[in-house]
Amino acid sequence: MCGIWGYWDRQRRPVEDATLTAAGRKLSHRGPDDEGIHHDQARGAAVANRRLSIIDIGGGHQPFMSADGQIAVVQNGEIFNYIELADELRSQGVQLNTGSDTEVILRLYEREGISFLDKLNGMFAIAIDDAREDAMYLVRDRIGVKPLYIADDGTRVVFASEIKAILPLAPAISGKSAIDLEAIDHYLSFNYIPAPWTIYKHVRHVMPGTWMKFTRSGVQTKRWWSLADQREQHFEFDVWAEEFMGILDDATRIRLRADVPFGAFLSGGVDSSTIVGLMARHVNRPVKTFCIGFEDPRYDESAFARQAAERFGCDHTLEVAELNMLERWPQVLYHLDQPHGDASFMPTLRVSELAAKHVKVVLTGDGGDELFAGYDKYAAFFNRTDALTLESQDFQRSYFDSISLFSTEAKAALYRPALRAQLQGLDSFTEAAKPWFDEASHFDRINQALYLDMQLLLSGNNLVKPDRMGMAVSIEARTPFLDYRMMEFAFRSRGQTKLSADGNKKHWFKKAAAPLIGEGLAYRKKQMFTVPIGDWFRGESRDWLKAVLQGSSLLQELFEESQITTMLERHLDGSANFTRELRALAALALWDEGRAE
Image (tube, rainbow, N blue to C red; front, side, top):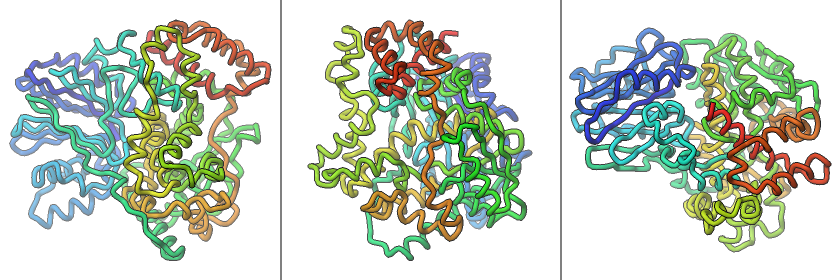
Protein backbone atom coordinates (compact mmCIF):
# COMPACT_ATOMS: atom_id res chain seq x y z
CA MET A 1 0.00 0.00 0.00
CA CYS A 2 1.31 3.39 -0.92
CA GLY A 3 0.38 6.76 -2.29
CA ILE A 4 1.10 7.77 -5.87
CA TRP A 5 1.06 11.11 -7.62
CA GLY A 6 2.41 12.86 -10.68
CA TYR A 7 1.52 14.83 -13.78
CA TRP A 8 1.48 14.79 -17.58
CA ASP A 9 1.79 18.07 -19.46
CA ARG A 10 0.70 18.01 -23.09
CA GLN A 11 2.83 21.08 -23.81
CA ARG A 12 5.91 19.58 -22.10
CA ARG A 13 5.98 22.23 -19.40
CA PRO A 14 7.74 20.90 -16.30
CA VAL A 15 6.68 21.69 -12.76
CA GLU A 16 9.23 22.65 -10.15
CA ASP A 17 10.88 19.76 -8.33
CA ALA A 18 10.05 21.45 -5.03
CA THR A 19 6.36 21.57 -5.94
CA LEU A 20 6.36 17.90 -6.90
CA THR A 21 8.01 17.02 -3.60
CA ALA A 22 5.56 19.16 -1.65
CA ALA A 23 2.66 17.26 -3.22
CA GLY A 24 4.22 14.00 -2.09
CA ARG A 25 4.49 15.19 1.50
CA LYS A 26 0.68 15.33 1.55
CA LEU A 27 0.74 11.53 1.19
CA SER A 28 3.37 10.78 3.83
CA HIS A 29 0.82 8.93 5.99
CA ARG A 30 0.15 6.54 3.08
CA GLY A 31 3.84 5.86 2.59
CA PRO A 32 6.04 6.63 5.59
CA ASP A 33 8.82 4.19 4.66
CA ASP A 34 10.20 5.45 1.34
CA GLU A 35 9.80 7.97 -1.47
CA GLY A 36 10.66 7.72 -5.15
CA ILE A 37 10.16 10.20 -7.99
CA HIS A 38 10.74 9.81 -11.73
CA HIS A 39 10.62 13.29 -13.24
CA ASP A 40 11.17 13.65 -16.98
CA GLN A 41 11.33 17.42 -17.17
CA ALA A 42 12.06 17.46 -20.90
CA ARG A 43 8.76 15.69 -21.55
CA GLY A 44 6.81 17.40 -18.77
CA ALA A 45 5.93 14.14 -17.00
CA ALA A 46 6.38 12.57 -13.59
CA VAL A 47 5.29 9.50 -11.68
CA ALA A 48 6.03 9.28 -7.98
CA ASN A 49 5.42 7.05 -4.98
CA ARG A 50 5.31 7.21 -1.20
CA ARG A 51 5.82 3.65 0.01
CA LEU A 52 4.41 1.63 2.88
CA SER A 53 6.75 -1.37 2.67
CA ILE A 54 4.78 -4.63 2.76
CA ILE A 55 6.32 -6.98 0.16
CA ASP A 56 10.08 -7.24 -0.50
CA ILE A 57 11.05 -4.64 2.07
CA GLY A 58 14.53 -4.09 0.69
CA GLY A 59 13.90 -4.47 -3.03
CA GLY A 60 10.53 -2.84 -3.59
CA HIS A 61 11.59 0.78 -4.09
CA GLN A 62 9.46 2.59 -6.65
CA PRO A 63 9.36 3.75 -9.41
CA PHE A 64 10.40 0.58 -11.22
CA MET A 65 12.23 1.42 -14.42
CA SER A 66 12.79 -0.55 -17.61
CA ALA A 67 16.41 -1.33 -18.48
CA ASP A 68 16.47 1.40 -21.12
CA GLY A 69 14.92 3.94 -18.78
CA GLN A 70 11.94 4.48 -21.08
CA ILE A 71 9.20 3.04 -18.85
CA ALA A 72 8.52 4.07 -15.24
CA VAL A 73 5.88 2.31 -13.10
CA VAL A 74 4.40 3.17 -9.71
CA GLN A 75 1.47 1.59 -7.93
CA ASN A 76 -0.63 1.98 -4.82
CA GLY A 77 -1.87 -1.39 -3.63
CA GLU A 78 -0.94 -5.04 -3.92
CA ILE A 79 -1.01 -7.68 -6.65
CA PHE A 80 -1.93 -10.75 -4.65
CA ASN A 81 -1.15 -13.29 -7.38
CA TYR A 82 2.27 -11.79 -8.07
CA ILE A 83 4.06 -15.02 -7.13
CA GLU A 84 2.23 -17.02 -9.79
CA LEU A 85 2.72 -14.24 -12.35
CA ALA A 86 6.44 -14.04 -11.54
CA ASP A 87 6.77 -17.79 -12.03
CA GLU A 88 5.00 -17.49 -15.38
CA LEU A 89 7.35 -14.73 -16.48
CA ARG A 90 10.43 -16.68 -15.45
CA SER A 91 9.17 -19.70 -17.40
CA GLN A 92 9.14 -17.41 -20.45
CA GLY A 93 12.75 -16.38 -19.87
CA VAL A 94 12.08 -13.05 -18.19
CA GLN A 95 14.60 -12.07 -15.53
CA LEU A 96 13.16 -10.59 -12.34
CA ASN A 97 15.57 -8.74 -10.08
CA THR A 98 13.39 -8.40 -6.99
CA GLY A 99 10.55 -10.09 -5.15
CA SER A 100 8.30 -7.05 -5.63
CA ASP A 101 4.84 -7.20 -7.13
CA THR A 102 5.47 -3.83 -8.80
CA GLU A 103 8.33 -5.29 -10.83
CA VAL A 104 5.88 -7.93 -12.05
CA ILE A 105 3.65 -5.11 -13.33
CA LEU A 106 6.57 -3.58 -15.22
CA ARG A 107 7.66 -6.87 -16.83
CA LEU A 108 4.11 -7.78 -17.85
CA TYR A 109 3.61 -4.34 -19.40
CA GLU A 110 6.90 -4.61 -21.29
CA ARG A 111 5.78 -7.91 -22.83
CA GLU A 112 2.04 -7.44 -23.31
CA GLY A 113 1.21 -3.76 -23.17
CA ILE A 114 -1.81 -2.56 -21.23
CA SER A 115 -3.73 -5.80 -21.90
CA PHE A 116 -1.76 -7.39 -19.04
CA LEU A 117 -4.32 -5.97 -16.59
CA ASP A 118 -6.63 -8.95 -17.08
CA LYS A 119 -4.03 -11.13 -15.33
CA LEU A 120 -3.92 -9.15 -12.11
CA ASN A 121 -5.71 -10.23 -8.96
CA GLY A 122 -5.37 -7.38 -6.57
CA MET A 123 -6.23 -3.91 -5.40
CA PHE A 124 -4.31 -1.25 -7.26
CA ALA A 125 -3.98 2.18 -8.76
CA ILE A 126 -1.15 2.23 -11.29
CA ALA A 127 0.65 4.96 -13.22
CA ILE A 128 2.88 4.09 -16.17
CA ASP A 129 4.96 6.70 -17.97
CA ASP A 130 5.99 5.25 -21.32
CA ALA A 131 8.47 7.46 -23.19
CA ARG A 132 8.49 5.03 -26.13
CA GLU A 133 4.86 5.91 -26.85
CA ASP A 134 5.22 9.38 -25.31
CA ALA A 135 2.14 8.56 -23.24
CA MET A 136 1.03 8.01 -19.68
CA TYR A 137 -1.42 5.36 -18.45
CA LEU A 138 -3.49 5.66 -15.28
CA VAL A 139 -5.21 2.45 -14.16
CA ARG A 140 -7.67 1.62 -11.39
CA ASP A 141 -8.57 -1.81 -10.04
CA ARG A 142 -11.79 -3.57 -10.93
CA ILE A 143 -14.12 -2.25 -8.22
CA GLY A 144 -12.18 0.75 -6.90
CA VAL A 145 -10.59 -0.59 -3.72
CA LYS A 146 -7.71 1.82 -4.30
CA PRO A 147 -8.41 5.50 -5.00
CA LEU A 148 -7.08 7.54 -7.92
CA TYR A 149 -8.04 11.14 -8.69
CA ILE A 150 -7.24 13.37 -11.66
CA ALA A 151 -7.48 17.04 -12.54
CA ASP A 152 -7.23 17.76 -16.27
CA ASP A 153 -7.36 21.39 -17.46
CA GLY A 154 -6.86 20.41 -21.10
CA THR A 155 -3.10 20.95 -21.11
CA ARG A 156 -1.90 19.40 -17.85
CA VAL A 157 -3.16 16.28 -16.09
CA VAL A 158 -2.40 15.95 -12.38
CA PHE A 159 -3.13 12.71 -10.52
CA ALA A 160 -2.84 11.42 -6.97
CA SER A 161 -4.15 8.86 -4.51
CA GLU A 162 -5.77 11.63 -2.48
CA ILE A 163 -7.14 14.99 -3.54
CA LYS A 164 -4.92 16.84 -1.06
CA ALA A 165 -1.84 15.87 -3.11
CA ILE A 166 -3.36 17.27 -6.30
CA LEU A 167 -3.88 20.73 -4.84
CA PRO A 168 -0.19 21.81 -4.65
CA LEU A 169 0.18 20.94 -8.35
CA ALA A 170 -3.07 22.62 -9.38
CA PRO A 171 -3.82 25.27 -6.73
CA ALA A 172 -6.43 27.06 -8.84
CA ILE A 173 -8.90 24.20 -8.48
CA SER A 174 -9.47 24.54 -4.73
CA GLY A 175 -11.02 27.95 -4.17
CA LYS A 176 -14.61 28.35 -2.95
CA SER A 177 -15.72 29.02 -6.52
CA ALA A 178 -14.29 25.63 -7.46
CA ILE A 179 -16.78 23.72 -5.28
CA ASP A 180 -18.98 21.52 -7.46
CA LEU A 181 -22.58 22.37 -6.62
CA GLU A 182 -23.83 19.41 -8.63
CA ALA A 183 -21.68 17.17 -6.43
CA ILE A 184 -23.28 18.71 -3.34
CA ASP A 185 -26.70 17.92 -4.77
CA HIS A 186 -25.66 14.28 -5.22
CA TYR A 187 -24.13 14.29 -1.75
CA LEU A 188 -27.47 15.21 -0.25
CA SER A 189 -29.04 12.30 -2.13
CA PHE A 190 -26.51 9.63 -1.18
CA ASN A 191 -24.78 10.86 2.00
CA TYR A 192 -21.50 10.73 0.04
CA ILE A 193 -20.38 12.09 -3.32
CA PRO A 194 -20.65 9.33 -5.93
CA ALA A 195 -17.93 8.83 -8.52
CA PRO A 196 -16.97 10.32 -10.90
CA TRP A 197 -17.88 13.55 -9.10
CA THR A 198 -15.85 15.05 -6.27
CA ILE A 199 -16.41 18.14 -4.17
CA TYR A 200 -14.22 20.06 -6.65
CA LYS A 201 -15.44 20.85 -10.17
CA HIS A 202 -12.12 20.02 -11.78
CA VAL A 203 -11.21 16.85 -9.85
CA ARG A 204 -12.63 13.52 -10.92
CA HIS A 205 -12.03 9.84 -10.24
CA VAL A 206 -10.36 7.44 -12.56
CA MET A 207 -13.32 5.11 -12.59
CA PRO A 208 -13.03 1.54 -11.25
CA GLY A 209 -12.11 -1.08 -13.85
CA THR A 210 -10.89 1.64 -16.21
CA TRP A 211 -7.63 2.79 -17.73
CA MET A 212 -6.90 6.19 -19.18
CA LYS A 213 -4.16 6.89 -21.72
CA PHE A 214 -2.92 10.46 -21.95
CA THR A 215 -1.06 11.65 -25.05
CA ARG A 216 -0.11 15.02 -26.50
CA SER A 217 -3.33 15.11 -28.48
CA GLY A 218 -5.84 14.02 -25.85
CA VAL A 219 -7.05 11.13 -23.72
CA GLN A 220 -8.34 7.64 -24.43
CA THR A 221 -10.49 5.91 -21.79
CA LYS A 222 -11.31 2.21 -21.73
CA ARG A 223 -13.24 0.13 -19.25
CA TRP A 224 -11.20 -3.04 -19.00
CA TRP A 225 -13.51 -4.97 -16.60
CA SER A 226 -17.22 -4.84 -15.85
CA LEU A 227 -19.19 -6.79 -13.28
CA ALA A 228 -22.18 -6.51 -15.59
CA ASP A 229 -20.56 -9.07 -17.92
CA GLN A 230 -21.76 -11.84 -15.59
CA ARG A 231 -24.92 -13.84 -16.24
CA GLU A 232 -26.99 -15.49 -13.52
CA GLN A 233 -27.15 -19.26 -13.45
CA HIS A 234 -28.90 -21.95 -11.46
CA PHE A 235 -27.01 -23.57 -8.56
CA GLU A 236 -27.88 -26.35 -6.17
CA PHE A 237 -26.91 -25.29 -2.68
CA ASP A 238 -24.16 -27.88 -2.15
CA VAL A 239 -22.45 -26.90 -5.40
CA TRP A 240 -22.88 -23.20 -4.61
CA ALA A 241 -21.49 -23.57 -1.09
CA GLU A 242 -18.44 -25.50 -2.26
CA GLU A 243 -17.58 -22.86 -4.85
CA PHE A 244 -18.30 -19.98 -2.48
CA MET A 245 -16.10 -21.32 0.31
CA GLY A 246 -13.40 -22.42 -2.13
CA ILE A 247 -13.08 -18.98 -3.73
CA LEU A 248 -13.19 -17.18 -0.39
CA ASP A 249 -10.60 -19.51 1.12
CA ASP A 250 -8.15 -18.91 -1.72
CA ALA A 251 -8.88 -15.19 -1.78
CA THR A 252 -8.01 -15.11 1.92
CA ARG A 253 -4.90 -17.27 1.47
CA ILE A 254 -3.27 -15.06 -1.15
CA ARG A 255 -4.05 -11.94 0.90
CA LEU A 256 -1.82 -13.29 3.67
CA ARG A 257 1.26 -12.69 1.51
CA ALA A 258 3.28 -10.07 3.35
CA ASP A 259 6.76 -9.58 4.76
CA VAL A 260 5.39 -7.68 7.77
CA PRO A 261 3.03 -8.60 10.64
CA PHE A 262 -0.64 -8.89 9.71
CA GLY A 263 -3.97 -9.42 11.44
CA ALA A 264 -7.68 -8.79 11.00
CA PHE A 265 -10.51 -6.56 12.13
CA LEU A 266 -12.96 -8.80 14.00
CA SER A 267 -16.44 -7.61 14.94
CA GLY A 268 -17.96 -11.05 15.45
CA GLY A 269 -20.26 -10.56 12.48
CA VAL A 270 -20.58 -13.25 9.84
CA ASP A 271 -18.22 -11.51 7.39
CA SER A 272 -15.24 -10.85 9.64
CA SER A 273 -15.71 -14.13 11.54
CA THR A 274 -15.60 -16.10 8.29
CA ILE A 275 -12.45 -14.31 7.13
CA VAL A 276 -10.70 -14.92 10.45
CA GLY A 277 -11.77 -18.57 10.42
CA LEU A 278 -10.22 -19.00 6.98
CA MET A 279 -7.07 -17.12 7.99
CA ALA A 280 -6.61 -19.56 10.87
CA ARG A 281 -6.38 -22.40 8.35
CA HIS A 282 -3.37 -20.87 6.63
CA VAL A 283 -1.13 -19.56 9.40
CA ASN A 284 0.97 -21.46 11.93
CA ARG A 285 0.42 -18.99 14.75
CA PRO A 286 -2.63 -17.37 16.34
CA VAL A 287 -4.25 -14.79 14.10
CA LYS A 288 -3.95 -11.30 15.55
CA THR A 289 -7.44 -9.78 15.74
CA PHE A 290 -8.59 -6.32 16.76
CA CYS A 291 -11.87 -5.00 18.06
CA ILE A 292 -13.11 -1.94 19.87
CA GLY A 293 -15.96 -2.17 22.32
CA PHE A 294 -18.31 0.35 23.89
CA GLU A 295 -19.88 0.46 27.32
CA ASP A 296 -23.28 1.07 25.71
CA PRO A 297 -24.59 -2.44 24.89
CA ARG A 298 -26.60 -1.12 21.92
CA TYR A 299 -23.36 -0.53 20.04
CA ASP A 300 -21.03 -3.07 21.61
CA GLU A 301 -20.22 -6.21 19.61
CA SER A 302 -17.17 -7.19 21.62
CA ALA A 303 -18.78 -10.30 23.14
CA PHE A 304 -19.35 -11.73 19.65
CA ALA A 305 -15.82 -10.81 18.60
CA ARG A 306 -14.46 -12.57 21.69
CA GLN A 307 -16.56 -15.64 20.86
CA ALA A 308 -15.08 -15.79 17.34
CA ALA A 309 -11.56 -15.18 18.63
CA GLU A 310 -11.85 -18.04 21.12
CA ARG A 311 -13.29 -20.36 18.47
CA PHE A 312 -10.27 -19.83 16.22
CA GLY A 313 -7.59 -19.44 18.90
CA CYS A 314 -6.80 -15.85 18.01
CA ASP A 315 -4.43 -13.42 19.68
CA HIS A 316 -7.26 -11.00 20.33
CA THR A 317 -6.88 -7.35 21.30
CA LEU A 318 -9.92 -5.48 22.58
CA GLU A 319 -10.09 -1.92 23.78
CA VAL A 320 -13.19 -0.26 25.17
CA ALA A 321 -13.29 3.11 23.44
CA GLU A 322 -14.82 6.38 24.41
CA LEU A 323 -18.25 6.45 22.81
CA ASN A 324 -18.51 10.13 21.91
CA MET A 325 -15.92 10.59 19.18
CA LEU A 326 -17.06 13.88 17.70
CA GLU A 327 -13.70 15.49 18.42
CA ARG A 328 -12.23 13.05 15.88
CA TRP A 329 -14.55 14.15 13.07
CA PRO A 330 -12.29 16.95 11.71
CA GLN A 331 -9.36 14.52 11.56
CA VAL A 332 -11.52 12.02 9.68
CA LEU A 333 -12.62 14.64 7.16
CA TYR A 334 -9.03 15.78 6.63
CA HIS A 335 -8.14 12.30 5.46
CA LEU A 336 -11.29 12.01 3.35
CA ASP A 337 -10.76 15.31 1.48
CA GLN A 338 -14.52 15.46 0.97
CA PRO A 339 -17.66 15.52 3.11
CA HIS A 340 -19.00 12.09 4.11
CA GLY A 341 -22.04 11.77 6.33
CA ASP A 342 -21.20 8.26 7.56
CA ALA A 343 -20.46 8.30 11.30
CA SER A 344 -18.77 4.88 11.22
CA PHE A 345 -15.59 6.45 9.85
CA MET A 346 -14.83 7.55 13.41
CA PRO A 347 -14.83 4.09 15.06
CA THR A 348 -13.03 2.72 11.98
CA LEU A 349 -10.23 5.20 12.61
CA ARG A 350 -10.19 4.14 16.24
CA VAL A 351 -9.85 0.41 15.51
CA SER A 352 -7.22 1.22 12.87
CA GLU A 353 -5.20 3.05 15.50
CA LEU A 354 -5.46 0.02 17.74
CA ALA A 355 -4.30 -2.37 15.03
CA ALA A 356 -1.45 -0.10 13.93
CA LYS A 357 0.25 -0.65 17.30
CA HIS A 358 0.76 -4.29 16.36
CA VAL A 359 0.57 -4.90 12.58
CA LYS A 360 0.99 -3.25 9.18
CA VAL A 361 -1.72 -5.23 7.34
CA VAL A 362 -5.29 -6.19 8.27
CA LEU A 363 -7.87 -8.30 6.48
CA THR A 364 -11.46 -7.08 6.67
CA GLY A 365 -14.94 -8.32 5.82
CA ASP A 366 -15.79 -5.34 3.59
CA GLY A 367 -17.89 -6.13 0.53
CA GLY A 368 -19.83 -9.05 1.93
CA ASP A 369 -22.97 -7.02 2.60
CA GLU A 370 -23.11 -5.52 -0.89
CA LEU A 371 -22.42 -8.82 -2.64
CA PHE A 372 -24.77 -10.99 -0.62
CA ALA A 373 -27.54 -8.66 0.61
CA GLY A 374 -26.48 -8.19 4.20
CA TYR A 375 -28.14 -4.89 5.03
CA ASP A 376 -31.56 -4.54 6.63
CA LYS A 377 -32.56 -2.12 3.86
CA TYR A 378 -32.66 -5.00 1.35
CA ALA A 379 -35.11 -7.02 3.42
CA ALA A 380 -37.18 -3.91 4.13
CA PHE A 381 -37.45 -2.99 0.46
CA PHE A 382 -37.98 -6.43 -1.04
CA ASN A 383 -40.50 -7.43 1.61
CA ARG A 384 -42.79 -4.87 -0.02
CA THR A 385 -45.48 -6.67 -1.97
CA ASP A 386 -44.79 -4.74 -5.17
CA ALA A 387 -40.98 -4.73 -5.15
CA LEU A 388 -40.70 -7.54 -7.71
CA THR A 389 -43.73 -6.64 -9.81
CA LEU A 390 -43.22 -2.94 -10.49
CA GLU A 391 -42.39 -1.87 -14.02
CA SER A 392 -38.64 -1.62 -14.51
CA GLN A 393 -38.42 2.17 -14.40
CA ASP A 394 -40.72 2.31 -11.39
CA PHE A 395 -38.64 -0.31 -9.59
CA GLN A 396 -35.44 1.62 -10.23
CA ARG A 397 -36.86 4.90 -9.01
CA SER A 398 -38.52 3.25 -6.02
CA TYR A 399 -35.30 1.60 -4.86
CA PHE A 400 -33.38 4.84 -5.37
CA ASP A 401 -35.97 6.71 -3.30
CA SER A 402 -35.66 4.11 -0.55
CA ILE A 403 -31.92 4.74 -0.16
CA SER A 404 -31.96 8.52 -0.67
CA LEU A 405 -31.09 10.86 2.17
CA PHE A 406 -32.92 13.98 0.98
CA SER A 407 -35.65 13.63 -1.63
CA THR A 408 -35.69 15.89 -4.67
CA GLU A 409 -38.44 17.93 -3.02
CA ALA A 410 -36.58 18.17 0.29
CA LYS A 411 -33.45 19.37 -1.47
CA ALA A 412 -35.39 22.01 -3.36
CA ALA A 413 -36.89 23.29 -0.10
CA LEU A 414 -33.44 23.35 1.52
CA TYR A 415 -31.74 25.34 -1.25
CA ARG A 416 -31.63 29.11 -1.35
CA PRO A 417 -33.33 30.52 -4.46
CA ALA A 418 -30.10 31.11 -6.41
CA LEU A 419 -28.90 27.55 -5.85
CA ARG A 420 -32.36 26.14 -6.54
CA ALA A 421 -32.41 27.93 -9.88
CA GLN A 422 -28.89 26.83 -10.72
CA LEU A 423 -29.65 23.16 -10.01
CA GLN A 424 -33.13 23.13 -11.49
CA GLY A 425 -33.70 19.98 -13.51
CA LEU A 426 -30.77 18.10 -11.96
CA ASP A 427 -31.82 14.63 -10.85
CA SER A 428 -29.46 12.34 -8.92
CA PHE A 429 -31.45 9.31 -10.03
CA THR A 430 -31.03 10.13 -13.72
CA GLU A 431 -27.44 11.32 -13.46
CA ALA A 432 -25.88 8.97 -10.91
CA ALA A 433 -28.07 5.88 -10.47
CA LYS A 434 -29.92 5.08 -13.69
CA PRO A 435 -26.82 4.39 -15.83
CA TRP A 436 -25.78 1.65 -13.40
CA PHE A 437 -29.31 0.25 -13.24
CA ASP A 438 -29.41 0.10 -17.03
CA GLU A 439 -26.14 -1.85 -17.10
CA ALA A 440 -27.64 -4.36 -14.68
CA SER A 441 -31.03 -4.75 -16.38
CA HIS A 442 -30.33 -8.43 -17.24
CA PHE A 443 -29.99 -9.30 -13.54
CA ASP A 444 -32.95 -10.08 -11.30
CA ARG A 445 -34.30 -7.29 -9.15
CA ILE A 446 -32.30 -8.16 -6.04
CA ASN A 447 -29.07 -8.27 -7.99
CA GLN A 448 -29.94 -4.99 -9.70
CA ALA A 449 -30.16 -3.31 -6.30
CA LEU A 450 -26.90 -4.93 -5.19
CA TYR A 451 -25.20 -3.91 -8.44
CA LEU A 452 -26.13 -0.28 -7.84
CA ASP A 453 -24.66 -0.43 -4.35
CA MET A 454 -21.50 -2.13 -5.61
CA GLN A 455 -20.93 0.72 -8.04
CA LEU A 456 -22.03 3.65 -5.88
CA LEU A 457 -22.11 2.85 -2.16
CA LEU A 458 -19.11 0.52 -2.13
CA SER A 459 -16.67 2.63 -4.15
CA GLY A 460 -18.15 5.95 -3.02
CA ASN A 461 -18.24 5.33 0.73
CA ASN A 462 -17.71 1.85 2.12
CA LEU A 463 -14.30 1.26 0.54
CA VAL A 464 -13.21 4.81 1.25
CA LYS A 465 -13.58 3.98 4.94
CA PRO A 466 -10.94 1.23 5.36
CA ASP A 467 -8.58 2.83 2.85
CA ARG A 468 -8.48 6.34 4.29
CA MET A 469 -8.84 5.40 7.95
CA GLY A 470 -6.23 2.65 7.64
CA MET A 471 -3.86 4.83 5.66
CA ALA A 472 -4.30 7.65 8.18
CA VAL A 473 -2.26 5.48 10.56
CA SER A 474 -0.19 3.71 7.87
CA ILE A 475 -1.82 0.28 7.80
CA GLU A 476 -3.07 -1.60 4.75
CA ALA A 477 -6.58 -3.07 4.62
CA ARG A 478 -7.20 -6.12 2.40
CA THR A 479 -10.66 -7.31 1.39
CA PRO A 480 -11.00 -11.01 0.42
CA PHE A 481 -14.69 -10.64 -0.48
CA LEU A 482 -13.66 -8.25 -3.25
CA ASP A 483 -11.41 -10.73 -5.00
CA TYR A 484 -12.66 -10.47 -8.58
CA ARG A 485 -13.45 -14.19 -8.62
CA MET A 486 -15.83 -13.73 -5.68
CA MET A 487 -17.48 -10.67 -7.21
CA GLU A 488 -18.07 -12.50 -10.47
CA PHE A 489 -19.38 -15.57 -8.64
CA ALA A 490 -21.74 -13.43 -6.56
CA PHE A 491 -23.34 -11.96 -9.68
CA ARG A 492 -23.66 -15.37 -11.28
CA SER A 493 -25.73 -16.23 -8.21
CA ARG A 494 -29.42 -15.43 -8.30
CA GLY A 495 -30.83 -12.94 -5.86
CA GLN A 496 -32.89 -15.60 -4.07
CA THR A 497 -29.64 -17.23 -2.89
CA LYS A 498 -28.84 -13.99 -1.07
CA LEU A 499 -32.19 -12.74 0.18
CA SER A 500 -34.75 -15.42 0.84
CA ALA A 501 -38.48 -14.97 0.30
CA ASP A 502 -38.97 -14.57 4.07
CA GLY A 503 -36.32 -11.82 4.27
CA ASN A 504 -33.34 -13.85 5.51
CA LYS A 505 -30.27 -11.82 4.53
CA LYS A 506 -27.10 -13.55 3.24
CA HIS A 507 -29.28 -16.62 2.94
CA TRP A 508 -26.90 -19.21 1.44
CA PHE A 509 -23.78 -17.39 2.65
CA LYS A 510 -24.76 -17.97 6.29
CA LYS A 511 -25.70 -21.57 5.62
CA ALA A 512 -22.35 -22.21 3.89
CA ALA A 513 -20.29 -20.47 6.59
CA ALA A 514 -22.10 -21.98 9.60
CA PRO A 515 -19.96 -25.17 9.74
CA LEU A 516 -16.86 -22.97 9.97
CA ILE A 517 -17.99 -20.22 12.35
CA GLY A 518 -20.85 -21.92 14.19
CA GLU A 519 -24.59 -21.36 14.07
CA GLY A 520 -24.49 -18.70 16.78
CA LEU A 521 -22.23 -16.36 14.86
CA ALA A 522 -23.71 -17.21 11.47
CA TYR A 523 -27.26 -16.35 12.48
CA ARG A 524 -26.77 -13.61 15.07
CA LYS A 525 -28.68 -10.39 14.44
CA LYS A 526 -26.69 -7.96 12.34
CA GLN A 527 -25.40 -4.98 14.26
CA MET A 528 -24.08 -1.96 12.37
CA PHE A 529 -20.60 -0.74 13.26
CA THR A 530 -21.50 2.79 14.19
CA VAL A 531 -22.00 5.24 17.04
CA PRO A 532 -25.17 6.90 18.43
CA ILE A 533 -24.53 10.29 16.93
CA GLY A 534 -28.24 11.17 16.93
CA ASP A 535 -28.33 10.71 20.70
CA TRP A 536 -25.25 12.90 21.09
CA PHE A 537 -26.97 15.58 19.03
CA ARG A 538 -29.90 15.55 21.49
CA GLY A 539 -27.68 15.34 24.55
CA GLU A 540 -24.16 16.38 25.42
CA SER A 541 -23.33 17.64 21.89
CA ARG A 542 -26.44 19.70 21.14
CA ASP A 543 -24.67 23.03 21.63
CA TRP A 544 -21.75 21.82 19.55
CA LEU A 545 -24.10 20.84 16.72
CA LYS A 546 -25.88 24.19 16.81
CA ALA A 547 -22.55 26.02 16.64
CA VAL A 548 -21.37 23.93 13.66
CA LEU A 549 -24.57 24.35 11.66
CA GLN A 550 -25.21 27.99 12.48
CA GLY A 551 -21.59 29.08 12.17
CA SER A 552 -20.89 27.67 8.72
CA SER A 553 -20.54 30.27 5.98
CA LEU A 554 -20.93 27.55 3.34
CA LEU A 555 -24.25 26.33 4.75
CA GLN A 556 -25.48 29.90 5.06
CA GLU A 557 -24.53 30.59 1.46
CA LEU A 558 -26.24 27.49 0.03
CA PHE A 559 -29.18 26.62 2.26
CA GLU A 560 -32.25 28.19 3.82
CA GLU A 561 -31.49 28.78 7.49
CA SER A 562 -35.13 28.20 8.40
CA GLN A 563 -35.07 24.69 6.98
CA ILE A 564 -31.97 23.73 8.95
CA THR A 565 -33.40 25.33 12.10
CA THR A 566 -36.64 23.38 11.74
CA MET A 567 -34.81 20.05 11.34
CA LEU A 568 -32.57 20.89 14.27
CA GLU A 569 -35.40 21.91 16.60
CA ARG A 570 -37.57 18.91 15.72
CA HIS A 571 -34.65 16.55 16.25
CA LEU A 572 -33.74 18.11 19.58
CA ASP A 573 -37.28 17.99 20.95
CA GLY A 574 -37.71 14.39 19.82
CA SER A 575 -40.64 15.01 17.48
CA ALA A 576 -38.62 13.72 14.50
CA ASN A 577 -35.38 11.87 13.81
CA PHE A 578 -33.17 13.91 11.50
CA THR A 579 -29.94 12.22 12.55
CA ARG A 580 -28.78 11.38 9.04
CA GLU A 581 -29.74 14.74 7.53
CA LEU A 582 -28.10 16.78 10.30
CA ARG A 583 -25.06 14.52 10.22
CA ALA A 584 -24.60 15.14 6.50
CA LEU A 585 -24.95 18.91 6.88
CA ALA A 586 -22.53 18.94 9.81
CA ALA A 587 -19.98 16.95 7.80
CA LEU A 588 -20.24 19.45 4.95
CA ALA A 589 -19.75 22.35 7.36
CA LEU A 590 -16.79 20.70 9.12
CA TRP A 591 -15.16 19.79 5.81
CA ASP A 592 -15.38 23.40 4.64
CA GLU A 593 -14.07 24.69 7.96
CA GLY A 594 -11.09 22.34 7.82
CA ARG A 595 -10.39 23.20 4.20
CA ALA A 596 -10.13 26.88 5.10
CA GLU A 597 -7.60 26.29 7.87
